[in-house]
Length: 210
Image 1 (spheres, rainbow, N blue to C red):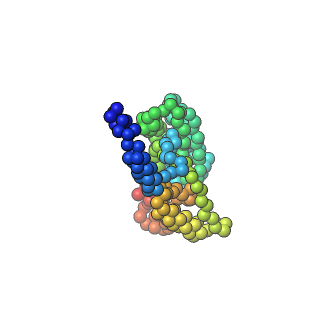
Image 2: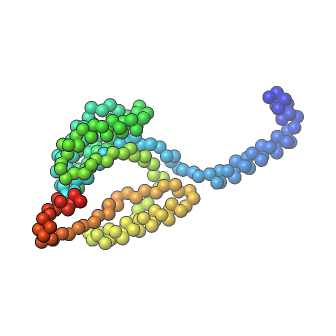
Image 3: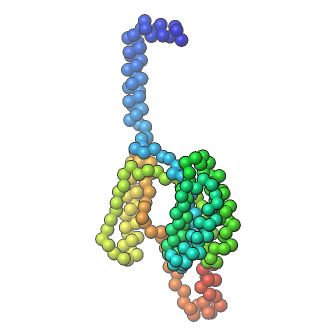
């Protein structure tokens, strides 16, 4: 080490050249590096969602949300829980305490508690889905708007435009993630005649469970 320092002192022109080369390489590297205004981080959230086709928000609140809240109430590491009941399903958002270092362990605990109340959920509700969310803070928010209409076709066209904008943005070398917010899920409506049901001895529930 001493000999290296002595060489550097005695050969200052060479050291200046080496330093300049390092600075140039660093500048070139910065130009090709993938940059993020806000680095990715895990927002400590666990989401429990339960579809309940055909149910009103009140039925979802009583049949789904209240039971989910009761199921996880005794777990430690949960800072805040928020339930949302809407037509056709509900979900429970669990915000974890800062000291939780292993969110996946708590996900497993939540799943275990929810499994114990599955038999108490409404008969027509679907199986609960539990996941940990990784949310990235948005650097830019971009809105895609259209004239206010209530037709399904206009909603689908608006979503199609938003998806194409998202795909175009993802082609940019400095963009790593684009999320759509506020779009409705795709839905398929199936119309069945009562005569056909009677012909085959089926009910609407029989068809829904296929």
